[in-house]
Length: 434
Image (cartoon, rainbow, N blue to C red; front, side, top):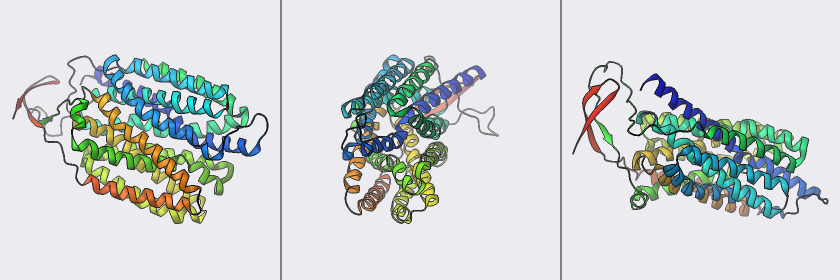
């Protein structure tokens, strides 16, 4: 890979990471949720007139819209390119937050955050990772995916304190207008830096020390599967199930962490959200690097089993009322949750190739939205009952243990061997053998 090509690849990576840093406002929902709850309890003519049981509905619907818009956005990314797809995402997010600023009605927030912003997240997110992966060797798939999606997980580090400040200084609805302008400008501006490699581009494989000048080693060719072929694969359903469990359990905690922290940390609860975000982002990068070294399946097994242990440990930790233990638990749960957002796009690329990657991963990503909706809703229902919080953690832990077992049935894809026949400069001529 030439220096110019390498620089272009890293520019795309940085643009995708920047877009995700803006779109990661999803994970600051618990801050908005706390402000809405306070408004309902305070009352008054300008207060939010919602039922307390419906506070989480915009977030739950947002997760669902995010996930299913990824299918349409993935197809757009494959057809019209990542720049235009991300541009659509920025416009949708800006429009959604403007609607939330215009009205505090339940319908406005469900539509604004749940449908418009949720769809915008899907369009922007779907356009960030695929072009970045295409510029680099398959040996860096986990690393590059981890860096790009880390932006989404890291966002609450600045969005949580920023949102807390804006809500205190300008109120809920004015804050939404400010956030709308900021996100629209950032996402739409960075969208123009996203680009696929030129047609026929093949990234050079890194040369191992001591192997300089030798023909490139045999490698595996990946079949570019259509979505119908993917849906006929048992691996898809095993991955969908584990993604549903891993994402759903993580989102259940992320959506409520500020409320849990407020009991022991008061107005500093946003610190728990920010620290959890650091864990979330770190998990994406670490899982990506680790999966490049030991394999995707082994990494997924480790992450799901560790997450299961953490969910069971959450019962005594939350009951202890210790702010330090709660922050530590939140950061570790965020770390494990974040690993899902690196591993599953890497699985999709490894198993089903690049040609239809946007659509294929969009379909797989539906597990994330359904998991967030189902686990979030079940958790809210349980939390309304005596001892319900503990039951939520136990249910999540049990599901994660089941997901760990499912990973044992995943097998590495058997691919056609590709033998290197000639090395010319930085390009490798290859022939395929059975």
